Image: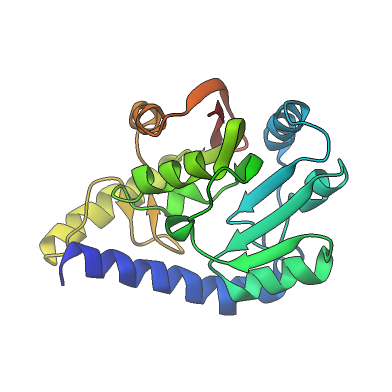
Length: 222
């Protein structure tokens, strides 16, 4: 199997697990945690947007953050690659539009005042990071804002990364260091220096960043 086929298989595996394993109980058993830093950054993000703006909630899942966006009067489009998660979001928040589309497949152009991508970029392969950030940049209006997070690996995840890389090489898999295939779903953990370079290459500017809740937070502007 070449790397492109291997990565595609990981994407389909992730989609299937969200559809069948997590979507039925998401927001009840799964997807619950204290996220004070997320809320602080969302408040800052929302403070930068014009009244009654248009926001894309990318990889929205079951719509965990939609109430914060909708209560400010913004129009929200939620996209996700999991039909199961989108069905949960639509049932909870009928005022939001939803569309089944992956981050790599976005083709919007200058449609949104703001975009968020919460707790999902760790599922993106290194090859697709520039593509996804470029998709966000094109989707934003001039001076639009993107807020996204990237998971910070802990001690357990770092051990899994090293084990996965060693075992992947032994098995002849086209694995890259930083990828975790023994996690619940595919994860890739780039360095923050690499993320900042990809942001710059995409034509975005970091205006604030920080760490909390197990994630690195990037607030950027087009």
